[in-house]
Image (cartoon, rainbow, N blue to C red; front, side, top):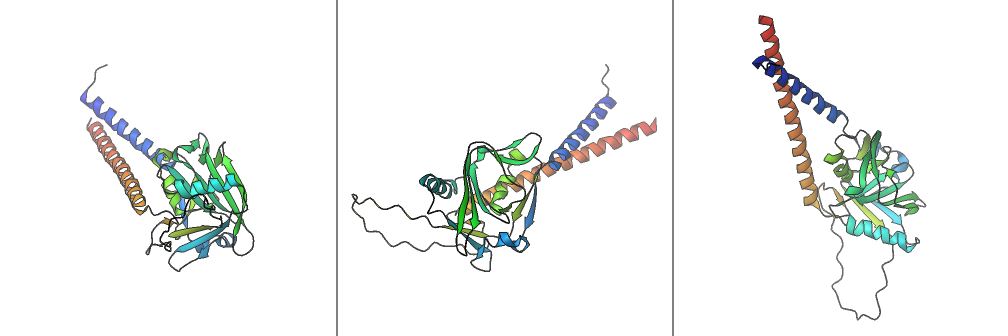
Length: 269
C-alpha cells in the first residue's frame, strides 16, 4: 500500500479523535463525589455529632471499655499507628443509624470488574449505635478477611477524598457523599489506660498538656496532625487533574485542526 501525505494526515486525525474519545470515556467512569453540609444530613446522623465550636469542630464519643481485648487492640492500632500513616486509609462515616470507622492499608482497597464503588479486603470495621445521650456503643466489629463494600449511602468525613481521588481508581464508576464543613473531627473513647507495671520504678514526668486544636479550617482528626501531608496530597491531585485536562484539550485541538484540513482538502477536489 502506498503511504501518501494525505493518508498520514487522515491517520493522525483518526488517532487524535480516538484518543479524545478514550479520554472522555475514562473521565465519565470516574468516581463521583457529592458534598453535603452537616445541616443537610438526616437528623439521626446529626445526633452522632456534638459541635465543640461554631467554626466546624465536632466530636464523637464512642464506648469501647466493655469490649474484649482483641477489639480494643484493633481500635488502638487504627487510632494509633494507622491514622497518621500515609500507607493506610482511615475512613469515618455516618448513616441515619450508625457511626462507622473503616480502616485498612492502601493496597487493601480495590474495585471489582462490573461492580460500582470500592471494596476493602483486609482491615477493620467498627460500627457504633447511639445509646443514651453521651456515648455511642459498639454494635458491630469486623476483622475484615473477605471483601466488604464502601456504601454509597454513607456520609464520609472529607479525609476520604484522598481515597476517592486515588489515581488507581480513576476508571471506577460509582458515587459517594462527603461532609464538607466538618473541619476538625475529634474522636473520644472511654478505654481505660493500661495499668503501669509495678515492678518498674516510676519516673517523674511533666504533667500532660491539653491537646491543641488548630485554629482556622484544617482537615483534622484528633491525633492526626499531618497538615503538610494533606497539603501535598491536594497539590498532587490537582496537578494530576490539570495535566489530564491539558492533554484532552490538546488532543481535541489537534483532532479538530486535522479534520478541518481533510475537509478543506476534499472540498477543493
